[in-house]
Amino acid sequence: MTILDVRTPEEFGDGHLTGAANLDVSAADFTTQVANLDPGGIYAVYCRSGNRSQAAMTIMRDSGIGAVVDLVGGIEAWTQSGGDVVTGS
Image (cartoon, rainbow, N blue to C red; front, side):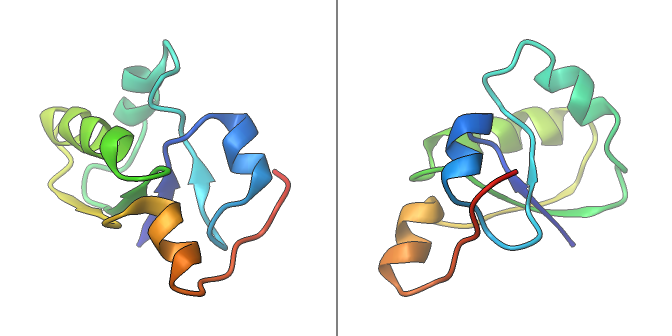
């Protein structure tokens, strides 16, 4: 499973889940980056609170990626429940 943080690189640097890759849904080339993902892969997607991850998941599914799950509540819910984050790129 690949964990995708779809926030901005700055937000990602401030704290993200261990092992997450950053793929900024607001970037002009997001759709192109999604096209380079393995369509047979399994992806867990999150943002700050859940709004951007929903948009990213729609684009991913429209691009042919079938196994996409939302980390409900985003990184805010994760940290509020005591989950660890790492900082830096």
